[in-house]
Amino acid sequence: MRDAFHADPADVPLAAAMHALSDPLRLQIVDLLAREGETECSAIYSALGISKSNASHHFRILRESGLIWRSHQGRQQSARLRKDEFDTRFPGLLDTVLANIETHPALQ
Image 1 (tube, rainbow, N blue to C red):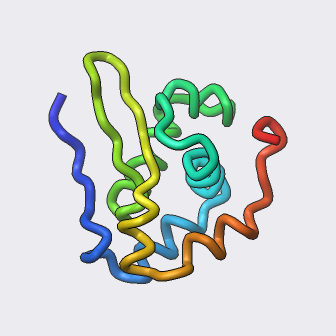
Image 2 (image 1 turned 180 degrees about the vertical axis):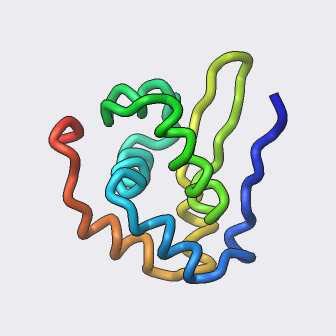
């Protein structure tokens, strides 16, 4: 498996960051990672009730906007929020978004 592209948050334009945060499902992924820390991708699929292919699309957008980092350990894949790096680029944006997310009922 080739390594996925992970954007450096310092190089991400505001429009790309806002696009990544504009989708309700991506917001749920970001919220879950903010609360749980690094999480296996399969646990994210299960928690949100989404397919792997649907999640892969959203993970790609979040990676390319500098919001998450995905790593692989053998067959296990996990994701983590890059909050500190993202906050350096966009101070306060992620905290404001996270404070105003309407949480998916399965995650409450």
